Length: 314
Image (cartoon, rainbow, N blue to C red; front, side):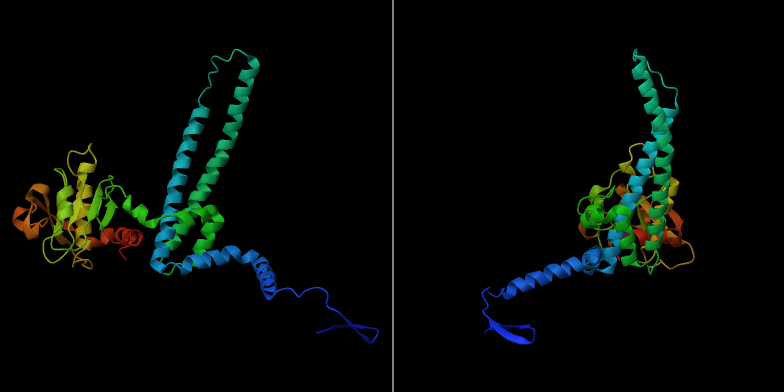
């Protein structure tokens, strides 16, 4: 079919020498144009796409894990900077530098580092404060997850959000034995506290417990069995009192007495007095208990909920 062009109101037919561009080519041009037009919003689209693949609880676990890891890294960085500052503030002995020019360069380098260290410490403090604010916002019930993710990406955590493995983090917890799917909480003295899922028997905990470990369970009603793994710290010959109280509080919280406003009776014993075989392996008996503690589940409520969210129990 001839193509017509208009020139001084005269219609002149001309032959179409060039072949028409294939439809697919026009489609590719359109796609390139659209992608180029959306380039400024590409990061926001990636964040939305990442969140759409995760549930709300999984997204919270991911953000919490990345933030806590970043906080630990910031703390380690600050400790290293403080050590450098102390080292540079000490009198410098330039023994072995016979050349005055080299000694002068060394003193200049040390003075320059001494000037930069306070600035780097202030930057570390500011980063720590910002990360703490974001983590506190995440702990609220109605936290704006998409906004928090964007703030974390702007803070420089975009690559870590893409590569962070939540399940690997949970499996690598201090004190978690292989195959244990319960909660792991660290006490004030660094002793791991293992909280098993409610079951009739606990063969795994019975197998991994050692001489100085203690078992906790509510005296009445149903609840999870709790193992205080004092044996993980060789410098502790016996379980500290504060760790025992914390383990007892955990046993009360993960029981039928979770909402109790009164003290809850929790018994404890060692591995020698726990059922070793049969259908009742890992169970505690009141007649075999070594002692009795008054627990308060509210004292560990926030800590337990954070651990549940972080380790995927919620």
